[in-house]
Amino acid sequence: MADDSANQIPPTDEINSMSINSQNDEASSTSTPQMSVEEKFRIVRSIGEECIQEDELLNLLTKKPQPICYDGFEPSGRMHIAQGVMKAISVNKLTSAGCKVKIWVADWFAQLNNKMGGDLKKIQTVGRYLIQIWIAVGMHTEGVEFLWSSEEINARADEYWPLVMDIARRNKLPRIMRCCQIMGRSEQDELTAAQILYPCMQCADIFFLKADICQLGMDQRKVNVLAREYCDDIKRKNKPIILSHHMLPGLQQGQEKMSKSDPSSAIYMEDEEAEVNVKIKKAYCPPKIVEGNPCLEYIKYIIFPWDKKFVVERSEANGGNKTFKSYEELVADYEEGNLHPGDLKPSLSKAINKILQPVRNHFNDNDNAKDLLKRVKGYRVTR
Image (tube, rainbow, N blue to C red; front, side):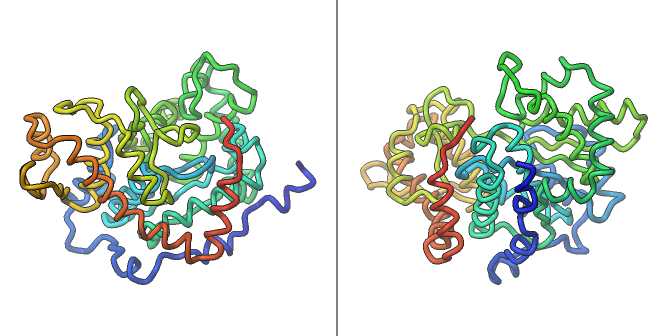
């Protein structure tokens, strides 16, 4: 492994050359001088299901013209719609409010967590594939920086590793093990030594990247709280603000989150139209029941933020076509039985396919993207 390390660092020039198409560059809106602090706060706060703490967020936006937001991901397989569309929506909101977004391509972390069998070259191929998807779907790259953990840590090792060591030194093993959820593990799992190191490194990332805001999923909450506790330990006044977004459930009954090992649990970003139609048709969607209904969650967290509306097409006998302007309006109809799953599902499929079509086009028309997808599909996903 050590002999190949020079070849395993992803070429920075390749990533820097990736840019969104000109139409989306023009649509990318950095914060305008007319935007008030209150409006910035409303936009940034809307991303999180939870914010720790709101008063700190408001103070940050008041005093710092361009706060740094940290988001990260393990390149561990194909990208599902929550990671693809929801992240693009969140990043575009943050940059529109004047934030700088640092997206941490956590290739070394995926290796520590044994993703792709621990093969770093495969992990980095997956990372490049994921970036291509965000570009294709419409993430505004102005104000966004993709940083590879292997590259950045190697370049500033003298800064990074003392920080990791200090975090590890100040915390007991049970506290670190409580963070295992961030890796998709539990405290009951038999963990490797590498997986014990992982939470200390992720906590260090926040300070290493000089992040003001941690914008990650609710499943990453424990390590973000660890970072705030570390600030108490070292008497640091300015703590990273935690902005935790909602976790979209799997499509089948009782699936709290999507699973890359279960293709039926999620829509993938380059799924064909027919695949989307079949998955939504088979999805759990009980009549008149809102809670725990994954189809309604897709509409709430993907369709409405993307399209600002949800259009149902149905026969006159079933009530005729209707455009819902808010999620609350849709829920009211659904709970009353005025909107049936048999009409909701085809309309949801159509809305999703509309969002995904530019991604399909990109992977059909771009030779580099096509090659990346072929290779990623050929990899065996490991837990």
